[in-house]
Amino acid sequence: MSEATKLHSDGIINEDELNKIQYYESQKLFSIHWELRTILYLGILLLSSGIGILVYLHIDTIGHQAILAAIALASGGCFYYAFKHRQAYSNVQVKNESPLFDYIALLACLLFGTFIGYIQYQYHLFGYHYGLATAIPAVLFFYCAYIFDHKGLLALGLTGLASSAGLSIAPMQLLESNNFMSNNILFTALAFGVITVAFAKYSDVKNIKAHFSFSYHNFAANLLFIATLALLFNQPLKPLSFILLCVLSFYFIKYAIAQQSFWFLLLSTLYSYIGLSYVVFSLMYYGHSGGDGIFTLGIFYLFASCAGVIYFFINYKKILGLKK
Image 1 (tube, rainbow, N blue to C red):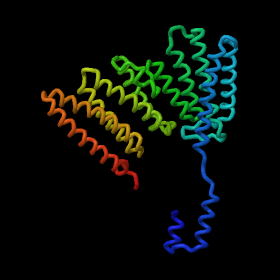
Image 2 (cartoon, rainbow, N blue to C red):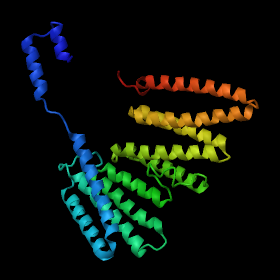
Image 3 (spheres, one colour):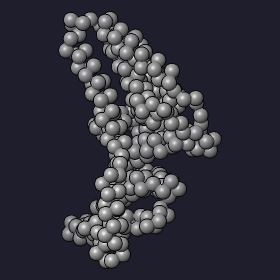
Image 4 (cartoon, one colour):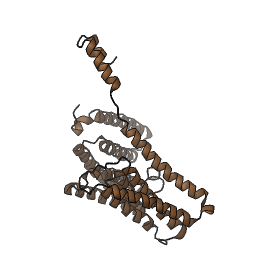
């Protein structure tokens, strides 16, 4: 039963008013904004993937130079359109007039990245300096992200810079491609995450594209928490690693409250819970020799901690200062 029908059955509105409300509801427009954006983004990804498959299947018949020329022309055409129709730069958020602008700018940068990767693979333009093959596109992505006010290009730029530093940031490769037993990888990840957060805070203070702050913090949070947990699990300095985990949790929970962001509250809570559980079970294991005692304490901890997490999220609106 709809609200209008319930109001009519309760005698609050009459038949004529009910008919007017039902007619208005049946004729009301509804937004397909996100559906269209999703379709357009999928179209860009499919086009980029299709170009890669075409190159792979017909490399012997088309020729390297012809393929590179086609990719360069397509990328140049997209960049020409993007620079011609972009809005004037501003430190605040800029809305582009054309709904296709964001997707053409994204396609231009993806094609440029494909061009650089292809030319490095085939002709070794940068020799054995493979980081340059990702650093150069990443710098361009950052420039375009700010010029075009494009969060997608910002994410590409962050990913490219991380890759040039030897880190794999893609969600499916984050745990597989990085050697988290290596101190170099771990400290690089921590340094990169801290620099990213510091730059985001600087941008907020100077009010330079402050709406990019979420992307910076989201990128840094996952990188910092995973690197810290890897230190906690695999390296000998476990007390310092746990202290670092607590500091990160405090910072990102504080950020979540300031931004009223459930996402950062969720990230901080889950990563902290994983780290805390590891510490608790480690202390149980080394502090008790009896297996039954460890099992009992472990069960008690799981029930108590799960109840605490559930209570925490039931009351997340109070924590974030949101109105019910």
